[in-house]
Image 1 (cartoon, helix red, strand yellow):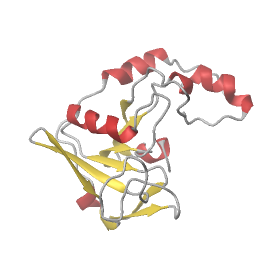
Image 2 (cartoon, rainbow, N blue to C red; image 1 turned 90 degrees about the horizontal axis):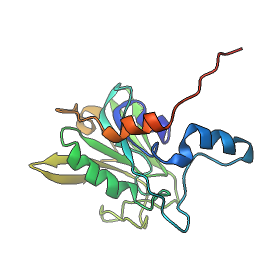
Image 3 (cartoon, rainbow, N blue to C red; image 1 turned 60 degrees about the vertical axis):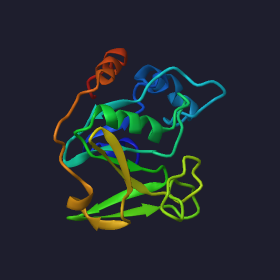
Length: 189
């Protein structure tokens, strides 16, 4: 999956769930207007922050979807994730560009990107914050207080890509977001 469908399988995910435009009440208000759930940057950046959300923990890792995109807060998701990784140094980060899928098959994986779409991987393997390359996946580790970024191989073994966390720090922003975004439940008919 993409977005929440990508992060849900991992230990944690980088989420835009603190964006008030994605809150339940805002989504239901716009449900009949055929708007999609993704935020877009308008003329003015909105004052909200990305959060680390706990996920199903079927696969180890802290995952960032849409790594090469800017949302309505005006912040490139990869830039925020780099800062977030320094607050969560016990976890391995996996960043997935917008037009990219990380396909898991048994004990292996492959990176699949849409042809002709922009991404963060330059031809020389460098990073482009302007999406001047092709879509790809990056590995992030904090070593001795410094963030190290490596381009993920296009295919390989999962145990070489993913790493179990040595320490997990819960995000206070996640708790605040849940408080500010109550979910209404109704019985099924």
